Amino acid sequence: MPSVFSDLSPYPIVQAPMAGGASCPELAAAVCDAGGLGFLAAGYKTPEAMYQEIKRLRGLTERPFGVNVFMPQPSLADAGALEVYREQLAGESSWYETPLGDTDGSLDDAYEAKLAILLDDPVPVVSFTFGCPSRAALEAFAKTGTLTVVTVTSPAEAQAAQWAGADGVCVQGIEAGGHQSTHHDDPQADGTSSGVGLLTLIAQVSEAVQLPIVAAGGLMRGCQIAGALAAGADAAQLGTAFLVAPESGANALHKRAMTDPLFPRTELTRAFSGRPARGLVNRFVREHGRYAPAAYPQVHYMTAGLRKAAATAGDPQGMALWAGQGHRLARQLPAGELIEVLVAELESARESLVTGARS
Figure 1 (cartoon, rainbow, N blue to C red):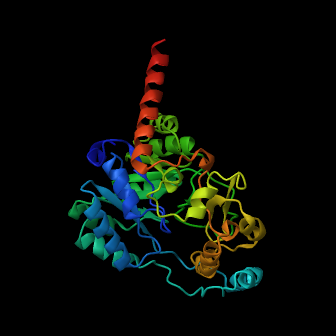
Figure 2: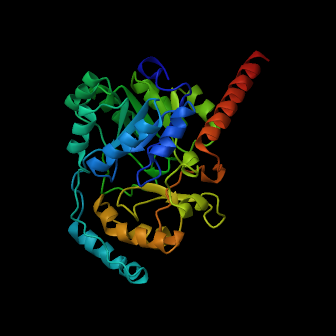
Figure 3: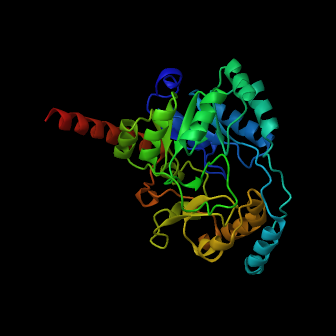
């Protein structure tokens, strides 16, 4: 990673911040110590829980790491649409013997409180999802020495991040697992089928801004990382590849599902959260995806109990099995060993490109 990012890690490999438990301190520490850049996910956590995870991670590694924060969301939910979806999920509630959740939860994920902690006790890197912070917020982080990265899904979003003063952008292609980090979720749009592939998006963003680029979206092999770097990225961010590592905090059912023949493909769906997110196609997605309204995080709150009950019951058909398009390429290796394999594959791919260019 060039310029201000060059001292963060020896290798241009970033472990994606996966909210929901996968990106735990143990995983981030293993990635950092192996030469990558590990990340914690503050999304869905209380400020105190985020702070405690940072303390744990600092006790596990002396290497630089990052923390990802969700941006506050506007209230887009239509009360009528939410009520219709609640009725749609009534059968799930009965099946799992779990009431549907209250949709009146916080829209800001305790954003200001988390920023206050991160500014008072700075970490090396802070990244943002679902929007771009204000110029004042990014300037405040710059004063503490924290590097900032804004996740983007279009050249326009990248330009907004550059204007606000971000140190870099994480360019997320349509192939990425988990939530699409669009800055504005249009409730009138389908939101589950449109998007730009990673390599094309890297090229578009490279021409739109003068910022370091971290590429994210379906990357599982070193040759893919080489392709992203050749397209203009400065580093590659991998989530699904690390999700199955023994250090990952992901549910065991989720890990097994990555390569289970019962789940051969992924799809963007609003079924679990109200925002487009890529996951394995299971029964819940097939039966409810077409009916889910554009209502994040209200739908997330509504289905939280169902997802937990499904996991407790050992039923992956009712869980949110977030996964990128490359999930079938997942390798159940310790995170440090996976870094070694990816680096070897990356170097091999680079050597092949050089050899090919000379011949």
